[in-house]
Amino acid sequence: MANRVYIFDTTLRDGEQSPGCSMTVPEKLRLARKLVELGVDILEAGFPIASEGDFEAVEAVSREFSWVQVAALARANTPDVERAAESLKHARRPRIHTFIATSDIHLRFKLKKSQQQVLDEAVAAVELARNYTDDVEFSAEDATRTDADYLEQISRAVVAAGARTVNLPDTVGYSVPEEYGALIARMVQVLGDTAIVSVHCHDDLGLAVANSIAAVQAGARQIECTINGIGERAGNASLEEIVMAFKTRHDRLPFETKIVTEHIYSTSQLLAQTITFGPQPNKAIVGDNAFAHEAGIHQDGYLKERTTYEIIEPHTVGVPESKLVLGKHSGRHALHKRAEDLGFTLGKDDLDTLYHRFTALADRKKGLRNEEIVALIHEVVGRAAVAASE
Ligand code: KIV
Ligand code: ZN
Image (cartoon, rainbow, N blue to C red; front, side, top):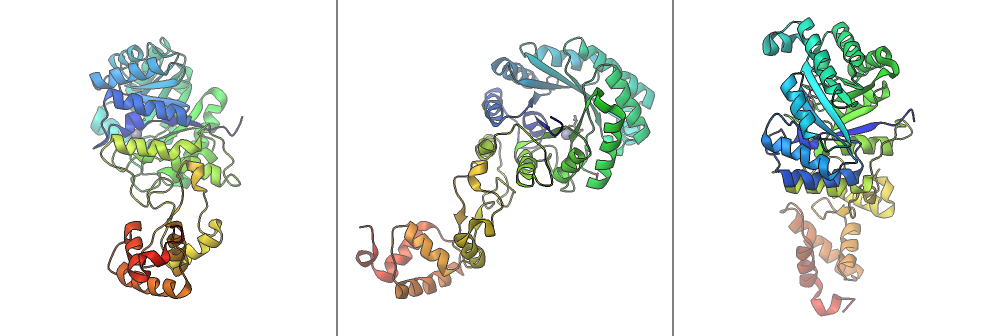
């Protein structure tokens, strides 16, 4: 299917290697189970040479989910590739993901190697990896700051050496959508159907999702991303945002993934419980406020017709329901609805008084909890008189 886009989840690798996100082997296994249920195509479980724990995690994930395509990261050198291969020995569909930096800045200051040396090492690593598996991915780290002719040359060389996927990361989140799209279009044209072009975007300028989408529009067919957008520095492209953009704007983005979107929210929650932080409240799709309405005009519109202020039905991503938050911007319509939900039927005068008291209190607070609303109702109209359900 021409528009099928493969979701390569790197929550357990790029995500895990960022501050506050390290995970134990049992934690990775628990999340891996959830990611499999979510329907990711490729699960990058770790960087086996980096630590004993990472090695064990890749081994455990590929043993337990042997039918899943599990990837292990390796720098382009013999010990890394051999360690990755060893960690994947139980996998039925192992992928070795080998990488080396290709930009002048990395070559000069970090690797202190020439372009030819880097190209030779990349080719050698891919050839070595191919001794262990047919499924080899090569990443040109810092691709977006790499000379494009050299990027083309090294991409052709690793494919000739046996790489099936060529990943062109925006490692430092520097690119902008139009530019990244053009780079990807060039590489898609160069590689034709000899390899899948993959993208991996960091969010340093808040453009990781936009860049990933531009890349797919330009012909990339694998996206590397993470749950809640965790990852190095400002994070990686967020899986849930990309997938829901494809689903919600299928008219403009007619791409297919295998993600079971109803599992998105529970996966996000499980990750938040596993690491030291959750998504910020206003995070798209999975944040606490993503389906919450506080302003009176919005609540009124929402109560008349949900789609006035919601473009996604919360169940589609596994969020139990939208929330009407009662705060100082809320209107009487929402207060009336909340009172009814809480089991109270109020007459017009009572509702007027309640609304008056409510706005006075809400002015001083950041939002009212249900218990506070109930206490106000009791104050205003007296318990016996108002409890319709009693
Ligand atoms: O950001 C990056 O370039 C990476 C590679 C190892 C794929 O994480
Ligand atoms: Zn990365």
